Length: 268
Image (cartoon, one colour):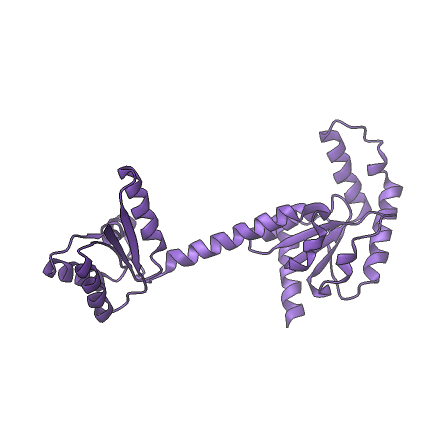
């Protein structure tokens, strides 16, 4: 079995994916990929190249440190190895194109990937726990938003999810008991949303028009909306440790900023 060694100053995950993508063009070739990760000095380079040489493998390397990349090239030549620098030519071209030098910091792409997948996990969690779905998962949420219908729970949840927070939201409906799970989670992670009755009527009326329904629907009736907001306030008073945010006439960004600021002050 032939071996391809992927040498990297970070995890080597990205380089391995590139190699596998290239190998896919050769059908079911009998090839094993071996990672040599976290190679960060001349001694480690020497040991890595010796390993590849003993198996007469192909060496593919991604090193942001130019001196180490040169060292790999030189030592590989001395051993008569086939070696391919996957990163340096691209870094050089980008440097010329952008007019700036590369940071030469190993692992930056892996950090970006990790952050991306963390945010995607948060988004998936938030979608799954929108509007009172999967209440058994409330304990796993970083934040739980509660409020009446059309008080910005879902837009706020998605905005915060894109910042990496796992968010669940629960609707408060007069006459229907909120889920028991809501009483058992850390109160400092619960955000109660308030909105003025007048503004809520406007939002709900607009929603009914969009859906082609009558604006005389009780959903947008001012007195009913007032009752809902009064119920909300009464319920919040039973939970003095919750963070209460008034979202009236605030953008999603402004409300999210206030939530995160209040969370920060609570933590301190």
